[in-house]
Image 1 (cartoon, rainbow, N blue to C red):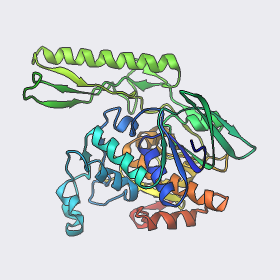
Image 2: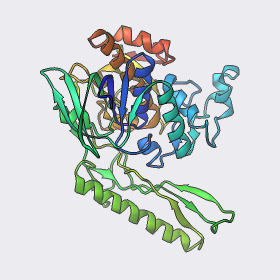
Image 3: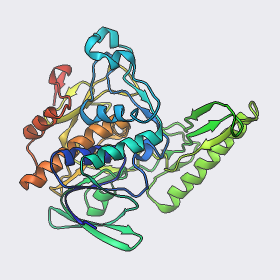
Image 4: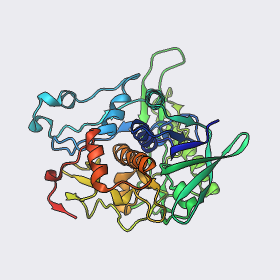
Length: 390
């Protein structure tokens, strides 16, 4: 078993997939550690099978590179369609694309399989059933991580590390400053089937959730998503949520039954990196950051544009530690944008490229060098789309 790499990525959700893929393509020997037995996290095992918009709603593509590549990969082995105006965007105008979001509905299994294929083709070493247990550091460097395995603890070393755990586990274990959110809402997404076994019927996704943003419902249960008891409570509450919903629907349709339930929690924002720069939906709309490493739209609203600063992804205590996905530094409003699939891929790619560059040179890359490398790889960075600079 290989235990030494240039880059180690902890977490195999969308952010981790993008990070590992980017690092390996940049020439770094890369290991992806995943505690489950399939990739994708909430995007697959959690049945959140909606690739939210890559555009701003005004016909402008905001997120390219690996973010768009993974969206297209989700359709390689399964059903789903790309909006025609985006499928043929080189022959359509901004006006024709405006109002038609570049959003894709996919299925979990095809996404898992295509993502794994991409990583293996890039030479990434994937270790499944590897749960992060501890982190070793020097004064300003992460030196190794230890994972629990069926044969006991295994230590792995690298030159650079990426926290894509979704819960900032790597940052927290290293002693990097983090922020927690204790008010996650109950979720209960599931697929139902209303036909008899062997017969024809309708497969349907039910996205059940208590209100979460801007404020979680006060009269509903809340979860921090970090304590063992709390996580377990959410899972059992989720299952009861699904059963109750199915029972209500079965009163109208006796053939309505749960077919597929999540194999992953539905917790949205639990713990994240804390840096001097917190990305904000409320404060940073149409703001161009001079250290931008990617751009996104707003999945909830059209006509919104954001750039993501490098400072949100780069740990401040440990020089070789990066965060990606919902682990990046963001305030309460920004967290609701950084946690979703396109942004996870954008920040994952940036972290992966930066980590690979650091593994090669021995120091964190300068912003200008990182931006140049990202644009060469298809990441979109266009200052002219923004109204003000910070």
